[in-house]
Structure formats: C-alpha cells, structure tokens
Image: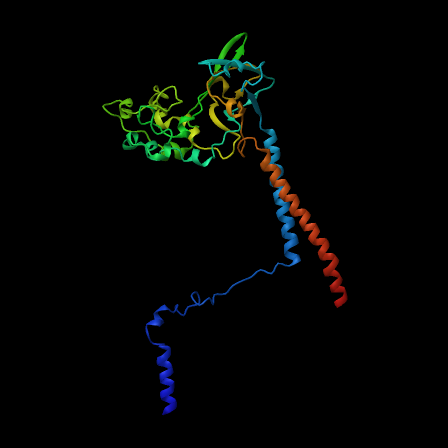
Length: 357
C-alpha cells in the first residue's frame, strides 16, 4: 500500500494530467520530428562531376552572352565640353543661358534598329541615402493635400524662399536632367530631322501604379497645382512638361519618371527616346548626322561628365560585356576546382584503395 501511494504522489508531483499537457506538441510525425529525411553525402564521385557540369554550363552561357554583346552596336558621344576645342565648351560657363551646341558624327554602315537614345552621367550619386529619400510619395501619387503640406523628407526643397510649397518637392525632382536633344541626318547639305519617340520609355509600374496626376480643377490641370511653385532648378512647372499631351504631362511625364527611377551606380545612362519610326524604322542609314543639344545641365562643378549613347539591343538587353565575362570566369573556376579535386582524389584515395586490397 505504501508503494502504491508513493507512486501516486510522484504522478501528482509531476502533474502529468494538469494544464502543462496543453503546451506539449501533438504526437505526430511532423511535430515530433519523425518525418523521413535525406542527407546528401558529398563524395568525390558526386562533387567532381557536379563542378564540371556547372562549369561547362556557365562557360556555355558566358560565351553566348559575350558573343551576343559583341554584336550589339553602340556609339558614345561625350558633350561635357571640358576641352576648349569642344563645340559645347561655350556652354560650360554659368553665365551661358539657353545655350545650344551641336555635335557631328558619321556612320559608315547601317546602324540597325530599333535604335535607343540614352543620356549618360558620371560621378553622379543617385544612390546617396539622403538624396534617395528626398521626395514625397503622397505628392507623386496625386494627393493634393500634400501639395500644400509637403513632407519633411523633401527639405531643403520643401518650400521656396517665400514659404510657398514646391511641387514636386525634394532633391531628386529638383535635380531632374534638363538637357534636350534633336538629331538630324545631313542629306545633300540639308538637315532631315530624325524622330525621337519618348513614349513608353518609363517602367510600366511607375506610369500605371506608383505615380498619378491629380484630378482636373474646373476643367484645368494647372488649377490643380494652385498655390504651389515649381522646383528651384526647373524652367517650367510640372503641369507644363508636355501641355500638348496630357498622358505625358505632370507626374506622368516619361522623362520625369525615368529620372525619378534612381540609378544604383555613380556612372549610369537613362533612356531618352527610341528611333523606330518612318524612314528610320530599320535603323540609322550610313551618312552624316548632327546632334543639336540644348545645354543646360551643369556637371563640371562636381567633376561629372555627360554623354549621349546610341545603341541597339538583343535578347539579353543592351551591351553588357561584364555579364558574359563573369559567367566565363565562374565557369572556368569551377573547371579548375574540379581538376584540383580530381588530382587530390587520385593521389590519396586511389593509394588507400590499393593498400586495402
């Protein structure tokens, strides 16, 4: 009797039937970690062929990417104007206003289309943290409350010197690229303008989801921005970026959207337009060309440069030799590692097998 009572007291002490049982996991294979498992054993017979196959695959992809990139045609024209002999040198002075310069170039063969027209900047850090957050997402989504009450993140481009709210506010919008371009083909001494299509160059999500224009006020788009002022460095307000096409005006202007999409590196290029219409649907014919530039965006003060890039594309996108070289290097390293492991395996493993025999 004593032993039985003692057992009972021990059971009560551990309270196996008490509330603590509710914290115990269910007695299933999943909760009790009794599911069947498989752990790979990495032997030489698996690792060496695996590295070899991965290396061959990377080399194959790398060769395809590199050869394709080599077939892409691109033409870069620097128009910073640092050199005194540059046609754009006259526009580098701060006193120069509404300065126009032109760059001439010659194509010896057909520049196959469609041709993409980019502008490029160097030493420009759009990835700087305080620069990247200097915008008002509510403004850019068309919320008129924030037109008159811009967020503090836009400072110091939140209000102008007269305490008027700036729309769009912030450093990114204030520093929007302002140079404009016109391309001409010289035919028999006459200039024939090459059409630059600037529609559809921004990300679809930016145009259709992220950014929105405010509703018209009394039938006027400009009235929606009443009581606000343009960014300090802009020559015209946002509602006049393209007054001839409301679908390309305001916050939905394609060039504005392209600029607001920040670059990750200090050397970048952004799409300005496409050449794919009319007589130039197949590309730019061989001949002489003149690029007329409205030079207004300063870069020399911070050691930057400006350029124009003409390029076509392939299935892999634009010209990018780095990607193909990276694949080739990784693939070659895998092959080298496979050979090293094979030599080590043959030197030590095969000898042990012979001794065991």
